[in-house]
Amino acid sequence: MKLATWNVNSLKVRLPQLIDWAAATQPDVVCLQETKLEDGKFPQAEIEAAGFHAAFSGQKTYNGVALLARTAPRDVVTSIPGFTDEQKRVVAATLGDARVVCLYAPNGQAVGSDKYAYKLRWYDALRAWLADELARHPRLAVLGDLNIAPEDRDVHDPKAWEGQVHCSAPERAAFSALLALGLQDAFRLFEQPEKSFSWWDYRMMAFRRNAGLRIDHILLSSALAAQCGACSIDKAPRKLERPSDHTPVVAELRP
Image (cartoon, rainbow, N blue to C red):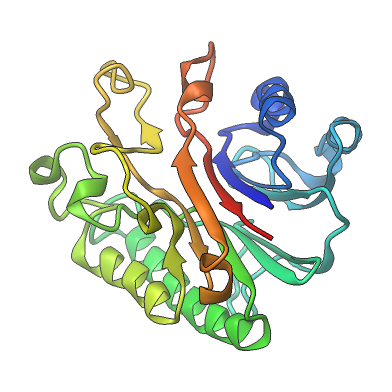
């Protein structure tokens, strides 16, 4: 099974790229973030024509998530239970014998801001929910734009980013708390090239200079991590005209 996550930064704009990429790479599951579409405008027909079922939760202009799968999703959830939030950041579903959670974590804006405090509250609620999900679903995959670079090696210039949003100690502690539940960072199960990133700013020729962050992640329960044969970042879509500022992360699970 091939799992992928991609913050498309507007599904309306990036739909042709998504369709082409899926045809070329043949993923079984694709988790999308920043779809920026109300549910009534989700391109269901095009997604079905590409061979996917879809579960989604969206809103106009901001946020929005979608879970695309070759098999029909069951037991769909579109919020963190018990956490009141108008922002559409979560969609989870059971696919076969696996539970898949697609997330778009809050950005946090700036350390000390109200949005930063909201981000940390969101992560507290997420951790509690994922603990319950793991207890119920030993075969659990969590994919998405988590808006945290877990370590300095996930940052192009650690000194410049030290203490900044995405890299602050409380955010990294929140990420570590997810791993402490028993989840594993699929990308770090394997030897990877230095300076491997999934996001590059549109400005200052950041992609050309590889001035990026690794903030898009695939976290696997121990049962799924044991089946993971590869995990990589596919930079090809970031080279296209009018790209998203993120690029897909892909993990392959052996039977």
